[in-house]
Image (cartoon, rainbow, N blue to C red):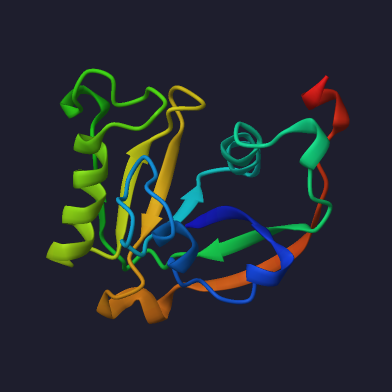
Length: 152
């Protein structure tokens, strides 16, 4: 399976989860290293665009194409099993606990979660500490610029 990640150039050479650990996000609390990926290029862009300000759009983004071998089992979170408000901003602690538990239990390398930005789409969270993580690789990366019409 191929997944996508939009990354600033200086952070694009490795998949570590260190960036996510610097702040609390939807699927992790501060201090939890986890890697956010999307099921499509468009979703990767949308997930980043919701956090950008027109005046501050960086021009050094790269789209990463990441290969997850079919042999890696994926844990899936069903939207119907999530608490009310899971998709709100600011993020609620029960969704952060889901990601933190996923990382702490270390039973799976990949967790499929619903996107709060694009209903019906899914994001993939990668556990860089799982034994199968070494099988996941960045297979391509290329410059990505946001269409300015998105921010009018």
